[in-house]
Length: 522
Image (cartoon, rainbow, N blue to C red; front, side, top):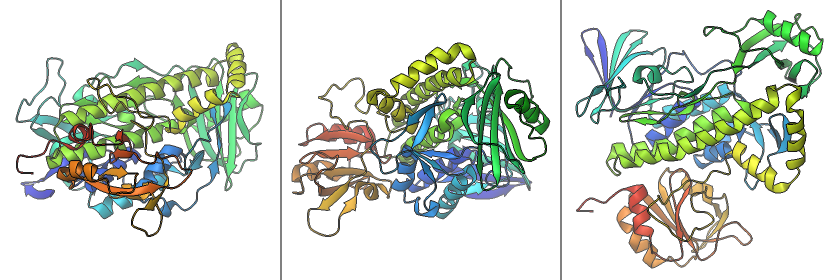
């Protein structure tokens, strides 16, 4: 368990994992670590969840993730819009899922939801704590030839300042979830290649104004967006050819927003009351490596991008969901450290793909008249369902497919292998009420799902040594559903299918790869 004691005026904490940053990625990671049995301390400079109206969209895969942990009831039924966009070109996001489209949930609600769950599970959340330094400890500790920290294999020691004085935190692992201006990334000196912002969108939430709703309206002098909800109008504007300003970390003032808005639209909104103003540029960077020994990164600390299509928050939450169960397994000793390398392999690939589609969207959104031919062509292409599904799969996260077998294994590829387990109804082989596959993931354990309904004794016997980590369920798929009758699926705690087959061939290998080598006396 996390221990807390004093050394003169310094509070000392010992824990399994230190998470820096209590935004959506950090809080999701804390819940997954606790669900997996790891002790976790979370530090954050802010006094509480964000009060700013930043990200407001949860995509289908994130909604599925929240459902797989039983978190959706608290959200109620948020507004859902089946239509999204790609670079401002309308795009139907409907795909096979229980939650197609984009769901409007303010970031503050998402953070509050995840913070409550993390607290219930026993995460130690320390607000008003600023990270000052970190150092790798014991085996191989120190910095490499480039001065980068985190290459040690013994643990990490961090210094922070809290409301009651200095705090020293000793952890086996540290995860930076502290946003695009990550202190952890700076202290580690982690290579962060890419490009800085050249253009920007100005954004403000304003009360007391009446302007028509605009959905990515391209005018002669720029791009204008406006939407009013509950008496508050969010405006976003870009003036063609206007470069991103050097702000030194400060936000624009409302006068700058009103001036640009008037030049682009001809409307005067200066009589309104600004509730929140910010600017976000088209910077596009990604860490070269998501893991630096005992230091890892998730969310905007690992990648910086314009939040086009509402992808940034969702990308970060999904990073954390991929990492949490793996890091907990390593901390428990049920898996080797090589499992953490799959986090980088899987999520760096996804991040690279998302950043590439965002770069394309930025050109379509913020480019001037020269991009109109490309926009016209894309408008024609999204009418083709194959194109629409491909783009919708990227933005929603539903199209993700991990390489779960590894480069050394070449099997006959199953259509579900590496993909998320579909939310589908099951008929219990021994009678009783139907249940959903999603309900079987709520414990955070692995799942071996036999779909022939006969108990599959050979499969059960093969998986028996991993029974403390993998639940065995023998059900029949409901008729007409997406699951293959007569087959079996090994599902990771994050819901992705790691093995599929009709017999035990290859199952033990997959169990070892994802759930660890058994001890000699197991």
